[in-house]
Length: 364
Image 1 (cartoon, rainbow, N blue to C red):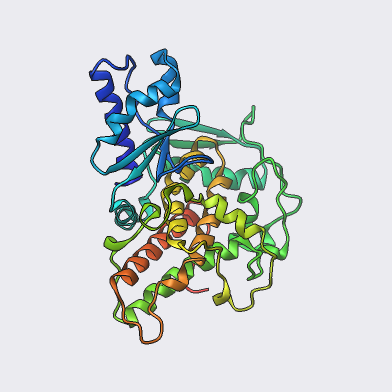
Image 2 (cartoon, one colour):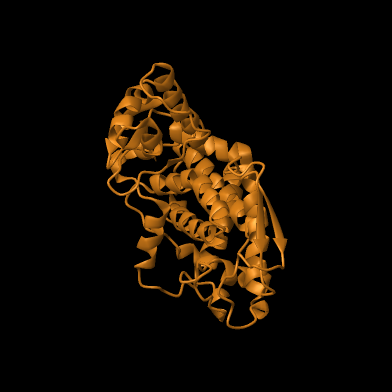
């Protein structure tokens, strides 16, 4: 079951509770499904009970208790737990991770697109400033992924005024210049330095673009070995470890940031953090991508997308060395599944960079 399908399953559970007279609320248009936060468990979590508590006139945990049996009995759901004030934490049955990878590969660059902003026009009034115009340009594409339309105008009152760059970023080149302006939050002052050009682990843009190039290299090398990709045997957090141990992509990024930065002259030595089940980190990053896109669109914050791409890249770099057979090892179903997962990561990295207006080279 993919996140989109799970969202529909949550809404179906609400509808059954309403039809059965257990809840007196209007069924919402959508249910947000994300990875579990701190203290959560399982594969996914939803705050639907907190969303419905006020209109239902009930405490959130009581709403969650009403919805729990309707969710537990849904096809593809193995278990449902309630944590915190009323979050429903959902553990999926077998095949959920394979379905996620298959969805990414099937939808390609359109993975993560939704109708969250369908029919809405987002007016962006910006000053005559290079950074504001670059952010607005990225937001036009990001808002479109959610079904909306962004219109950019130079008019008062301004509603998008990021901290200007301290100097002209053009000497960095188009890709590095855009990253330098988009990666920091709008309220942070961007750094316009040559650090954005170095091919080192300490450069987030390099890690993202290199990770994409590695996925392309893995596909080429696999083809040379006669190995194809097949997501059927992809294993996720529920299959390989305690479901309560799911790390979010931001956790992977934080772990990477705490390591001592080193000059990586041989990019093949770039490996992200791994806890023994790197598939889980990468699957978490893929599953969270649609949510990152929604936040970037609704909060007018392309930096959220940029930071998510860094987390995805770090997860891929911690996983890449497991994809191809080693030595006399023959390609197996596990290798085909890992290749499919790596190719899905490449799809997300290329799609995200494209939305930011940055190229994703096949060779780096």
